[in-house]
Length: 382
Image (cartoon, rainbow, N blue to C red; front, top):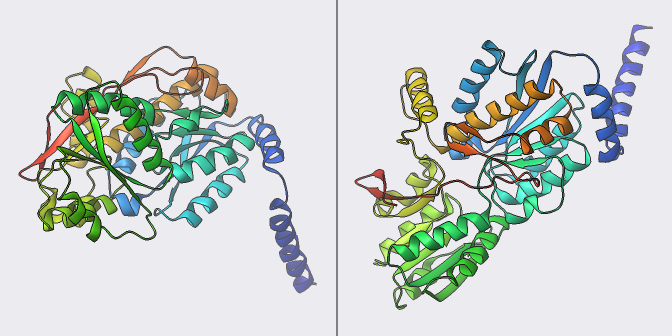
């Protein structure tokens, strides 16, 4: 009898798993709204980020914000609980994580997504399954142009980055520009937007080249670049491949200044080696900002972790606080309530500056900072 019961239980679980694969995401959205309508004091939030590859401080920012929110009841009567997943820059893991979150009816929101390609795919899944998607890293311009109700972004979109970067680089005296980009949703969009933005300035694009992340060899390229009369190389690609490009470019004697669209991560420094010296890159956060909110954040972060925060610690910290404010304001776990509360809220100042969203869920504006590596340290130059 016991064996029969165990057999029946196993068959039931298998049938439930099998059946869940055939429920549409729209139906999963209905299930989510029904589940979240039940009384509960907990808000479940999914986190998706390439923790092991980036080796940044995103998780530190999250944990610090989580402790502040739950200890001080900043989400009203709710406690926030995180389910954290590492996507490792792996497309299959990204897909699995998105499906896992969509299949979790008690989940209200997802924070994260560093790479644009997976973020675009996940956004459709989350929109159909009525799950709030709070982006803190992906920049692709089109992400917030489809009329989606469940997507909000706390980082600048590529078109706004490109406009600011064109102004920064042209103002720095760079007039003849080489544009290189990765053939993906991030690199292609940023390269296009940057070239379009350069049309407003007295500049000339003298060379263009693209590469695939799956099959990249910079040896011929870097030698060709030495023959081109240019005063800037703009590299639209993520680390660690950006580090490989820097290393090979400097190895063959290319001295043209390089501005990258990469982040200053340990993996980037490892791949670039000594060629990292002199490289420039843009970023969204200035740890030395004198705003009261940033000074407070840096002080608390340093006291807790014994080091200064990076961009992703600040982005994660602010994103969870933005979510908590919306939950408290609405008194709801419903993703649509929270999404609209974020979009239509008054401007809020966090560790990483001012947050004000438009009706599409896009961040309206923020400064862009240009850094240069000098003696192994990032130095703000513009």
